[in-house]
Length: 245
Image (cartoon, rainbow, N blue to C red; front, side):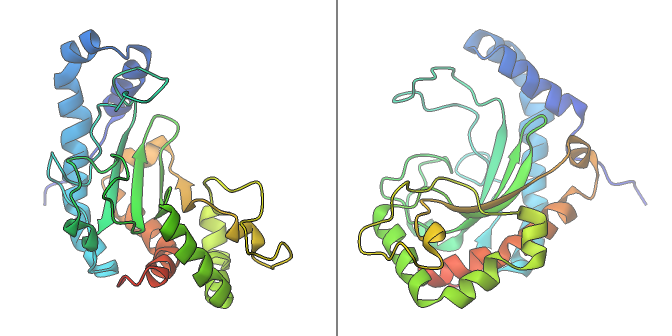
């Protein structure tokens, strides 16, 4: 039996380090073949191999290995409204999204703006030297979505605590990440037991992966294990937004 091949190698991370130090079009054009060989193609292969085990976790989530419009983010940054004008992302990422978002134009990039977007929680993988992480949730939901989640929190405090405060969840992800409001939203009791969660603007969890974990042939098992542990949060957010999990 042939030995399973790893998806990434030290050359994958070396390319991203070099890109961070040479983030310009001339350098990237001269080294684009290295990006294709050591980052993009292995990542697309990984995404394809994650589809079946992800479907076992939830038949409503998609690992799409299409090179354009799939799960993997484009390496090109949208600099139109950014202070940072560097043209490339010195990292690679993939969004494993809810199939309901197929009804919405994805714009050929999973990380484009929110206009016309259906808010749905998803799973996520971020590849970066010394900064790789895996997790999921809902990042920067639109105002109406945020209102629905906060209302659901008020009506379902026990299920929220069960989803985000279990020993297994806390051991892997710690507390939730993302941004929060400094003040209590209008109409909410500042003394509510979940006021810190009500103030959240993001509902995401993440756990770091060591660089060495990326070189293991069983990387998909490691990722799915983390996705499974994140599932209570994803399931709860789906319930808040009337989506199947």
